[in-house]
Every structure is written in structure tokens, then in C-alpha cells.
Length: 498
Ligand code: HEM
Image 1 (spheres, rainbow, N blue to C red):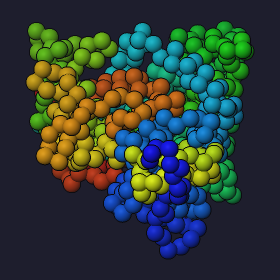
Image 2: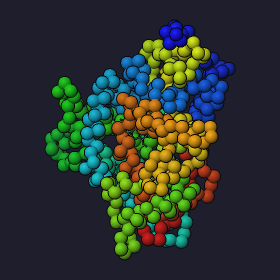
Image 3: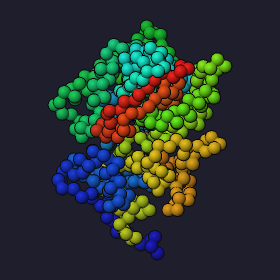
């Protein structure tokens, strides 16, 4: 009887705020995760807050993830929320500047170019880039001097940001781009990067220097990539079989080849998508390892066990072997659980949508309806840190990801009030653990990122011992990503057998 009864329809509760247009911008911008937690206590899993004139309806928990990630793209669209931020940076005719079907094709083009054969080569390339970087960086003087007794320090975020761009350029973007990194490309990249902030999301264009620099940097980088493409086509440049080379060979379903500017813009999008996500993840991982030398030692022992040589050294890692290292895998998973780089995933509502009553409802015979024009927002950061789902949720504990036998994701379990396992989660859009998203906008860079993060962490652990002699850094939410708040210095000394 209840099922056939028409239910009343109510808009979700609006978070209390004093200033009408400004709304909850300060609370959300200052600490989105705390803001969502406190709203969940007051309003439940579904609520709306005002963000500088926009109405944002938040859907929390695994079901909230499912609601947003699993929603139909014709009803909730990513491009409507992100296009004005990303098109000036990535460029025309790619990602959110095209209909969703075209983005799906572009994602496939990139996916087929990220093959296992390439990943095999990338392991050595990343390690080599890191070693070269450490040989030239003043922060690693103690390591350069081969002194095993002195301690030095490095800034975790700054170091990892530089290493990430060098290693991504060398692997994903090809030789020509990597070589130009030493010749001013890094400054252009930085100007482009400064065009992807919450301010640029709010206002696509303003008469401010950062906007002019963003546009100039886009022109130059896009022009630079297109000039490489032209040279390659005229066979004036020998090139490796990299992502650009692979994109040059592919076609849309209607038989059309990708134009030069589309290839250039896809490459810009890839660099931007992978930079802060990977660099923040590696810096958080290293900070935790410095804070927990016992875990760093376990990681080092894992390296010795798998790659140790009779003379007490360590041989090169291979891609296949790296994928079978349970402690390394657990360190990456656990870091992405606690420090998922993207705290808010948004979509624009194109027609009214009903919220499933099990996610949230005003009463038994009433449902919430999110009206057309709202933004819906999922935050896996919350479900990944929910104490109802994760034992000791606030504790960085890689061992939760394996048991005595090695791999076994004990983490995907929900605990009831007595601490007993309630049920095991599935992997789909309704999973509580979604650092790489889910559904049609899911990340295509997961394997690459896991490889890059894994090689970077392992190489550090092989070369140095780390300690933290400051309080563990808090998250900084001022940019679009969750990065460690400065200072985030790591103390290090050269490992005896490096
Ligand atoms: C999408 C996270 C690295 C390329 C996504 C999404 C998330 C994510 C959460 C879903 C966004 C949404 O639903 O709106 C991460 C994390 C990374 C990482 C945590 C590293 C730790 C990378 C790398 C690349 C990349 C290295 C490129 C090689 C993309 C692309 C999309 C995406 C192309 C699709 C966007 C869409 O379909 O709308 N990523 N990412 N990501 N990511 Fe990643």
C-alpha cells in the first residue's frame, strides 16, 4: 500500500547561513570535510548549502556516492559544472568542452595508449628521473655527499610536485616535452596551474593577472605541442611510442582522425589531471612513513625480500613484481583513503531528481527532490573516513588492507555497533572507498598513478631513512586539491646500503 501511495516531495533542508548570496562559502572553503560532518549531524545525509549564489545539494555515505556517480549523465552532467573552469586551461574540443559521448571516446583513446608494455618501461624511467633530481637538488646535499650519519631536510610537497611533473612528462608526454621542462616549460605550467583555483571555478574570466597568464600559458603550451606534432608528421623528429604517438594513430567512431589541437589539449588535460592528485598522494605517504618508521622499515624489508642481491644491494624493480608487494599496495591504498585528493565531486542537475528514501527522506511518506539547476555533490572523503565503516577510521594503518596471508581487503567491511562485521561492500558506484571515482567519469589514470606513486615511494625508501620532527601537517583546502599544509618538512639521512 505504501509503495503505491504518491509521496510528498520536499526540497532537501538548507544549511543555516546568515548572508544570503555568500551562504556557507567560508565554512565549506575553510574545511569542507568538517563542514560536511557537522551538517550530516544536523541534517542527515542529504542537505543543500548556498555557495556564492549556487545551490549545492550534498549526498553523503556510500549511497550518496552511488546517487552522484551512478546518476544518468543526461540528468546530472559533469560538463555543466566544470566546463568554464577547464576549457580555458585544457583548451577547446576536449573533455568538458564536448558532449559526454565524445569525452568517452577521448578517454578510450588515452586508455589504449596506457599499456602494460609502456608501464614496464616507465618503472626505470621514473626511478632515473628521481635519482637525477636528487643529484641536482640542494635539499638532498646530505644524500649527495654519501654521508650516512648526517640528517638533512626536504619540503615534502615542493619536492614531490617537482618530481611528479618530471616523471609524468618523461613517461606520458614524451621526450620532446621532458627536454623542454628545463627550458621554461615549468613556469608556463605553473601559470596554467594557477588558473585552476576555486576563484577560477566561480568566475571563468576576470580582469586579473592570473587569468591573463593562464590564457597566455595555454596558448604557448598548446602551440608547443602542436609544433611537436607537426615535426613528427614531417618525420623531422624521432619519437618514442608515447601517448602523443598513440593519439596520432587513433580515430573517432565516425572515422575522423584527431586534429592536432585536440591531441594537444588532451595532453594538457592529462598533465593537469595527474599532477596534484599524484603529488599530494606521494607527499602524504612520505609524511606518514616519516611519522611511522616501523612501516617504512617494513616497506624496506619488503624491497630486500623481493629485490635483494647476494652482495647486499637491491636490483631494479619490475612492473609485474611491484604489483605483488602487499605492504606497498597497502601504503598507497591507506594514504588514498585518508587523503583522497579530490574532496568534492560535482554534477549539474538538468531535470528534477528524486533522492532514494534509503539515502535520506523527510518522513516515511515524503521524499526529497533535488530541483533542476542545483549542483549535486558527492564526497568519498567522508565515506572513506566514516567510523561506522572503518575501524579506527582516523588512524593511518596500512595493515588494515592485508591480513597474515598477505592481500585481503578487510577494509571493505561495515561494522555494526558492537564492532562486528555487518557486510562487505561491492566495488561499484556505491562503494565507500572511491579515491578514483566511479561510473562514466571514473579515472583512467589509476594504474599509471599507482605505478608512479609506488615507484616514487619505493625509491625513497631504498635511498633514505625518514623522520618527522614536527606535528603531522594538517590538510590545506585552499586549492582544488587536499595538499599538506606547510611546513611539511621531512628529516632524512642516507640509507646505509644505498
Ligand atoms: C577522473 C582521482 C590520477 C586522468 C578522476 C576522478 C577522480 C580521480 C576522483 C573522477 C572525477 C569525477 O567523477 O568528476 C584521481 C587520483 C589520482 C588520479 C586520486 C592519483 C592519485 C590521474 C592521472 C591521470 C588522470 C595520473 C592521467 C594520466 C583522469 C581523467 C579522468 C579522471 C582523464 C576523467 C574525467 C571525466 O571523465 O570526467 N580522477 N586521479 N587521473 N582522471 Fe584521475
